[in-house]
Every structure is written in C-alpha cells, then in structure tokens.
Length: 175
Length: 175
DNA sequence: ACGTGTGTAAAATGATCGTTTTACATTGTC
DNA sequence: GACAATGTAAAACGATCATTTTACACACGT
Image: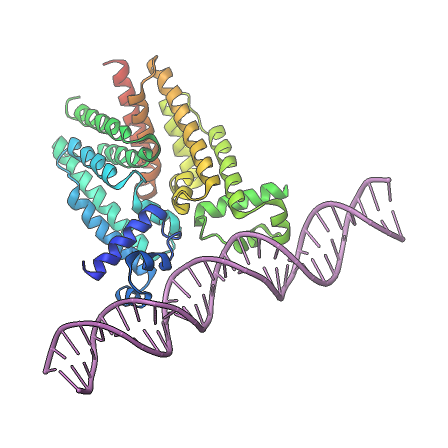
C-alpha cells in the first residue's frame, strides 16, 4: 500500500477511536510501522495531517452515502454507523477537541457541513417539488441527532429518525 | 463568592468555550485570580474538576429546562442555546475530547444521558398516554440534532425541530 | 501573643508532546 | 560503480503540561 494512504488510514482510525489530542505522533508512527523521519517527510505537521484526513473522509462519506430519498439517506447512515461504529460525527468531535482554534480543522468542518446541508437541501427539494428550508432543517436535525444519539441509544434511533423524517416529508407533500 | 464555586464557574466557562485539553491549569488558575496552591487545595486534579463541573452543569441544566410538553422542551433548548451560545452539547464534546478514557467523564456523561432520556421518555409518555420508545427516540434525535446543527445553522433549526416534534407526536395521538 | 489555617507568588519537578537531527542502510539509475 | 533518493533507528530539542514544593504574609480563635 502507498505510504501516504497508509499514514492517512492509520491516522483516521486512531483519531476516530482515540481522539486527536489523545493520539500522539509517536503512537501514530508506531502504528504505521514507519519511522518518524519518513512520516514527517510525507506530512507537514499533525494539523496538516488531520486536515487531509478530514478531507478524504468527507470524500469517502459522500461517495458511500446515498441521497436519493429519505429512506436511502437513513439506511446509508445506519450502514455507515454499523460499519464504522457509533461514536458520533468525527468532524464535530475533532472541532470540539480543538476548540475552534485550528484553522485547518475549522475549514474542513465547514466544508463538510456545507456539503451535507447542500445534499439534504437537494433531497428535500426533490421530494417536495419545491425548496423548503423549514423541512430541510428538520431532516438535518434528525440526521445529526440520530448520529449523536446512536452513541448511547444504539442504532434503533436511526430507524426511528428515518420513520420520523419520512412522515414529516410526507405530511408536507400531502397536507 | 465562594472559592469552590468560583473555580467551578471559571472552569465550566473555559472548558465550554475552549475545550478541556486546550484549557491548561495555568490558564484556569490565572482566570480565577487564585494561586495554584489554593486551587489544588480545593480540587484534587483536573479530571476530578471536570467531573464536578459536569455534575453541576447537569443539575443546572435540568433545573433551568422545562419538560412539561414538546413546546416547552424546545423553547427551553432555544433559550439555553441563546444564553450559553450554540456550541453543541458540552457532555458530548468533553467525551469526544478524552476519547472515552477518563472514567470520571464517562460516568458524568452517562448520568446526563440517562436523565435526558428519562425526562423525554416521561414527556412522551404523558403526551401520548402510553409509553412509546419509537416516538421517544424520534424526539431525542430531534433534540440532540437541533443542539448540534444549531452550531452551524443557527437557532432556526431548534424552531424547526420543535415544529417537527410537535407534528410527530400529534400524529401518534390522532392517527 | 501565639500557633494554626488559609492565602499568595513563584520556582521546581517530571512527564509528554510535536518536531528535528544525526548516523546509517538500502535501492534503483545513469 | 558511484550517486541520489528514500528508507530505518534513535537520540536530541524545546515547549508545554499537571502537579508539587518552597518561602512568605495575613488573619483569627483561645
């Protein structure tokens, strides 16, 4: 496997399961099986690394997820959560860790939020035949809340959120 | 003001706005206006302090919030968010920071989640005249999601979540 | 008046962190 | 067969962190 992707994959896994601050570079270096010199030749700094990790995670997330309709949206979230583990949104968690003080992370989180909001806006618009910011906010809240609450209530919350979102949109279509 | 509450309030504010790891003890000590010796006579360790902060925040949150019905629930959340700032749930953020490795934080977060879930369960049960775990999960997801999404979409998400929750429960009552 | 408790100010301790550097080995290429 | 390029191994660097310690000042109950 390519060294860059090996570093990226290892870093994403460690940041995701242990946190950004809790993951020291020494531990990351050991997990990759490389030397510190090599790692620092492939990555400018820990901050630059986490920014790259988030950018690639965003690309992967929006490749794997489906935004065709409400059912696909929450089914995709359920699949993702089962596969990756229910630890909540990595973007939000890393932002919280760094207290909004790492510029590269802020930019990555903003980009993710922009794309997520855009995709859900498109989904709702297609479902209703018109734009509806109120309905979009509701679906977004259910999506974010299902992600968060699944960390302590399990994946059943995601199914409940799917059913709720479906009902709310249906209600807007046939009032 | 009492020294213990002065330390607690300062710590809560700094942890909330800057994060746990980003807030060094030196900064906290400086913000309290006390000496390090005094602070460490009133608090066993940084971990013990954050546990105490979370316990007191939970008590304050559930004193200020109202769980009478759906409208009161989300109106309370909106008030809280405006007053405290939209930075997402502090319990979840601190848990993310420490990667589930600080036992005292895990316990505090679990206690908060248990109380939140219990209160919303009671609310839904009272509203429907019967227990409904599915509906409870939906309200919980909307609550958590509104808290999270308000950090980047503003407080309008909370109003949307309130309206959505109201509709979902009304639908369960009058199908 | 005296000791005890509680406070301040500031240096010291020991650990850990991100990052760099030194010294050396391996490999593919002209 | 020499030369870069790229890798490993490990020490070193400078900063920061949580926590402890030393030295000293003030108040107050008996």
